[in-house]
Structure formats: C-alpha cells, structure tokens
Image 1 (cartoon, rainbow, N blue to C red):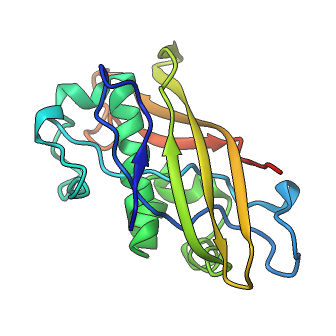
Image 2: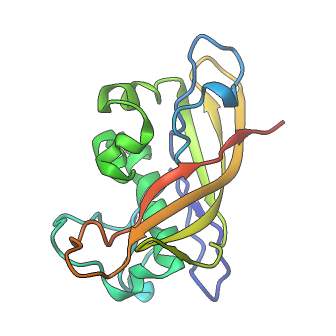
Image 3: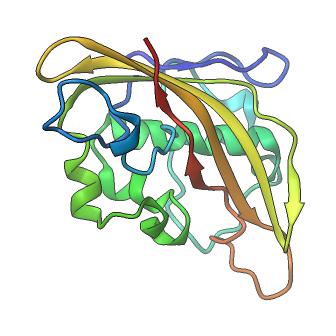
Length: 196
C-alpha cells in the first residue's frame, strides 16, 4: 500500500498510505456527494514522537483509551496524525477501529458499525493525501481544527475517483472531569466532495 501524508516538512515528514473510504450509494455509477456517508477523511495513526515515525511502518494505534494522549498529539499536527490513523484503519479493513475514530463512539457517522463497514465495499483502493492542518479554535470546552483531505483511488466496478474537502477534527479541552479518550482528536464532520 502506498501512503501519502502531505504536510510541510517542517511539521511532518511525508508519508504514504492507501485507504478505502467514504461510504457511497452503491447503486450509483458515479460518486454522489449527496449520498456520501459521513465523509470522514481517512485517518491514520498519530505518533507521540515525530522522530519515531517511519514512512515504511504505519503508526501504532492507541491500545489503551484510558492512557492520556502524548502532548504532541494535542496540537493541530496531532489532529492530522489522528486522521492518518483513521486512514490506516480503513486501508487495512479495521472498520471498527476507523468507526471509533469518529466522535461519539462512531455515532457521528450517522450509521451503525455494520452500515459503516458495508459502505466501503465499493472501493477497491483508497489513497489519502492529508494536507496541512489549519489553526486550532476553541468553543464550549472543545478544540476544533480543519484538515484538508484529498482521496484518490479505484472503484470495485472499475474506474477511478477523486474526493476532496475539509475534515473537522475535535477534542475536548483539558478540563476537569474529561476522560483521556475525550481529550483525543476525533472526526466530527467531513466535507469530502467528488471532483472531476
């Protein structure tokens, strides 16, 4: 699999990752933005230490939801890494892991886990290209950041596709009473749209 993380070298070394993603209406012969499932930009694993990341090895997922996120993962770059984690999960068909990276334990997708998993059946290949995240913004005890995402790939019925748009990541600010999992970045919205 090839995996591309396009973020300025100052922020993060380029990484490549092929992913399947964005549920769509399978009865349609074209990618229809109006029927796309919660367009969650593909995400893959964030890493606590930039120097430890490797283009050849996808980052390891967080195995313990109660372990607090490393300080490096609370930044905008950490949100991009979390999106990369999502991409890795989808690419390797770990749909329950990908689903859990959406807000509200996956319910922000608007689908059940089974529906979410089935929505990827139409994709034979899904390559995520993650852009430079924007500035973080705070609101009502949460922090938000927008990360540009471009997805290219192939459909199982043949032909290619391109999706592009912003993905909104959210985490609860470090407030008393918040859990470690709430303080991790999660996908809250996706604006992926088909492109010619």
